[in-house]
Image (cartoon, rainbow, N blue to C red; front, side, top):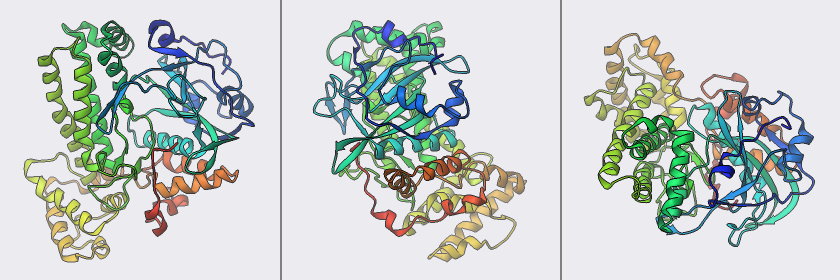
Length: 481
């Protein structure tokens, strides 16, 4: 780590968009979790130096060349514009090159108060840090664009939330922490010079191909539209619900960022809400595609000094095409079809209707379907359904569609590579958190192993593919962190 060469592009090129802040260390740091895959991407050894990780990422010391800053941004939170938010408990330590030569951000969460903490203490708790770490590992394993996490550092520093908890830090890695809210902040303050400065930075570092276009800013916005749509299509395909899709939690690069009250759906429910603070269901599973478009409209307004209304409208027209295009590809893989044809809709929706009516588990249903032999008239799956006759009718329509395209064995393998056996269910994260709060971190490491290969059978971890326990239905996840 001491050999990392910091380039600090944000610090050097975007004066006026941040405040310089030094980390406020947590006490008696201990290494709770570490991602070997992320570490290797940064050139670290397979076995990390735990003392060094604790020293540099608990806030006790700065790596040579690091220039920590807190970024300022705004955002629409639950539909209401908040004119100033910003890094209230996180610091951008700087940028370094990864093993592929790409510039990446190192962002330390839980590093203490900043000018943007408002009434907060600037801390992250162990509970939320573990949840973000595991979610980063889970979505990476599912090949869904996401920020990543290098490590979680625990401590005995007390923090007050709904109850007294212990503070922790998490080192987050991302190609960029640029958010929709960055642009909203400077647009609504009429600081259009800063807005252009930020957009030019994004073009240089993240959308250089757009510089060759006649209208670079419009071309960049179109790419953001497409990346956002494709990300949400991935979420929908696996039943992932972010839980708090405020514009300040939306990545310009189409990454899943800011894991708070997220959840992977268990029993299929289109109105699934993982965040118990979301009383109106604004950020429910079914609402995510519409909210993505709404958030992009907010970004379009923020970019209006650089992108005309006509250009924004043309770019936004790509949203539905990109969303449905990627979602159709993913659904074809989940159902073992070469493509979704126009008359497939009724058959495909029929399974979701059956699942919704009975609360059938989304992940297990598709994984079981992946193992079924469509040459057989009857499938053992029907025994899982209360409405057996309804499922039998659906099965006959489905198997005829599969048989018509041929090569059943090939498509079965495609399904197994598309439908995960393992996802990060809330109860799994909760069990890992409870053990970690007692000083035992083995469950986090086991979950990392499971989630790294979610499509593999992994018989030694079969228990993680079982239906969630009844007590998990009463878990409540909030924005508190």
